[in-house]
Image (tube, rainbow, N blue to C red; front, side, top):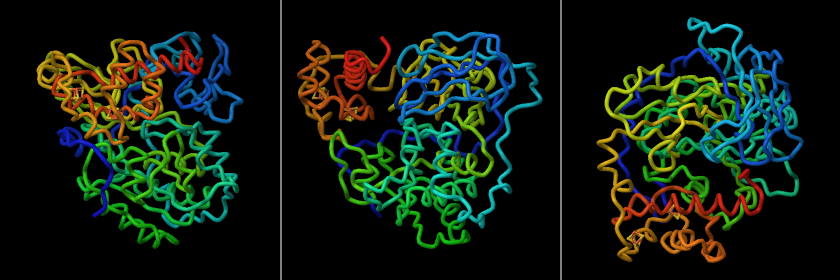
Length: 455
Ligand code: SF4
Ligand code: SF4
């Protein structure tokens, strides 16, 4: 079995809360807040005006920039407002607020029936350009959390080497099971997306990588690939369960034993990595011209009354989603977008679901008292554990110390921007120093200095 990358940790998985919960329709939206920044790259400009009627799937924001992706309305309704809205990553960002024509709880969002994605689809009828254009038009971005516009990844650039397409089904973050359910339930759609992505990128070798704690997903995708035409050379490989195995750079090291240069991107070494849910979205966009208006979100945590995996309209406020899952059953202390390692705690529950929201995790007061990195901080004891677990071989304590003292040039000299914000250093620190939080703050501060992010 492969599985080698430096550092990493083994946090408690906690996936049993939702792993056996099939994907169910999410709430009927009472108000959608479609953020104009849901991806890496240029923020969209509004493509609609206040008071304008919109239809489900209509573009409500777009940008001419190469690295960007349009955003669409998930519902038929009216634009009530274009305003600043809480954003899970950057604090606040402009959003198009849409109220539905009518809230119909009986008419909840439904994914497409899987019979509509036959394994023997003739993909030869689509050109690479058609596939890339469909992904751009649909506003698809990396659904694993990175949010990089997929069309840019798929762009068949003759200048770049073409070697491996890696499909990422690791889902190494604790608690989250949305990708796992997509692999089990949308198997044909994922395979169709993989075939289309391979055609678009022109990468001859394709590997599907899944952690060994998901044997059912390995079996489902492996069996389906045997039945799909032209897919016998696509291997499903099991990787050791270790966090952050699903990080793009760690995955490439584990699967191919290659390093992506610091500050570089995988295409520089002939590799493209796509998440399994992103592959599914590509199939929907190419075959049915469907924009990315909904996604699967794991709503989880011991405090949630009905944890599960839900097909949710992008723009749904987190509070609506928690209420839809029966609310909380015990005193909860922290609502996190994502999982406990890499997720971001939010204070404002009107924060909407975005394209990259794989999970909403509610941690209890009891957990907050026992999770290491939220306990009372003590001074650094120079134990070096944060250096040992860092998968990017950084010096987290030096970077965090520099950020704390506003010495950003020193933080940069320790490669602050190479940090993938995996949270391993905070998790392991016996002094409970919030190293990742400080590093994340430093990166935001630098981005604002360079005007890459709104203040
Ligand atoms: S410094 Fe960054 S990459 Fe390294 S362990 Fe900490 S969060 Fe992860
Ligand atoms: S793990 Fe914590 S205590 Fe140990 S060296 Fe790093 S910051 Fe200091």
